[in-house]
Amino acid sequence: MRLATFAALAAALTLALAKAIAWWLSGSVSLLAGLTDSLLDGAASLLNLLAVHYALRPADEDHRYGHGKAEALAGLGQALFIGASAILVGSHAIDRLFNPKPLGAPALGIAVMLLSLAVTMALLLFQSHVVKVTGSTAIRADSLHYRSDLLLNGSILLALLLASYGWAQMDAIFGIGIALYIFWSAISIAREAATVLMDQELDPQISAQMHDLACAVPGVRGVHDLRTRLSGTQWFVQLHVELPGELSLQDAHCLCEQVEAAIRSEFPRAEVLVHADPCSVVSPPGTAQAPD
Image 1 (tube, rainbow, N blue to C red):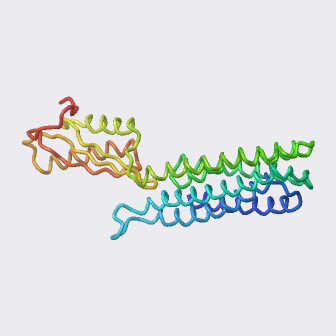
Image 2 (cartoon, one colour; image 1 turned 180 degrees about the horizontal axis):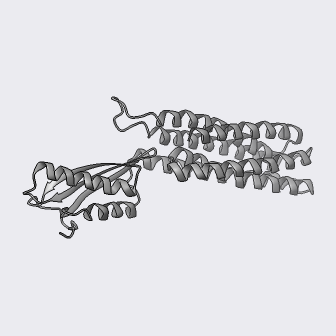
Image 3 (tube, rainbow, N blue to C red; image 1 turned 120 degrees about the vertical axis):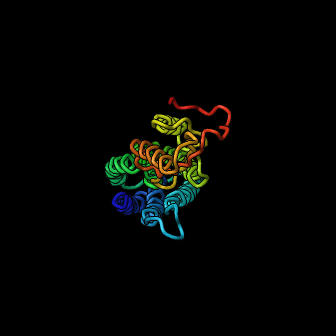
């Protein structure tokens, strides 16, 4: 995860420098959109780097559930950066639409955008691998807006090609379209970060699978009140298992540990808290009962 954040920051700064040179020489509003986006990508990736470093710290006395939600806070920060860039680019593109100017050095701009596409694609492949391995919210958010960058860079390339053939206003039109897409990406990132901060349940299919795993443990008569939430890369799971009332405390404890082990064997990122209830306690309506 740390390596992924360093790679994203290096890619953003490299592309920002290249786009700054190309925009200075060409005056393209589409390239300005790309430059603004890369600068904000760099700021967001720096924020991401700091957040991931903090999120990976182990739980301590002040944060018994760890520091994973720092990733979601970084996601909100990224959404703010990206939304601001969309507004800036959109306003500049609208001005250029009504006051078109010829582009200079289009060949340099096209070369820079080809470089941007190659670097962004390489970064996305690496981030995709990291998300698959860790499930990181922050890296997923970073990957989402770099995925939008791939479309953005492709659009800028097309706008420069059209402008070089005399379609000067297409540069501004593409700039407006890109700004709208960037703003939508910001909303998507903010929504995903909010689900973590608001302790939204994991996918219902995952919860159902955990329920079945617990019920499959021999001796467990039923399961209810299964709750889940996500914090960074960590899943927190709580559930009540129904056990025969005549069991000793030691036997009940052993069954609870077996339930925890069964869930963690399928979901290693889950931290499982199991509460034992005697079957004599009335279960909530609709509680599934495990076979004896």
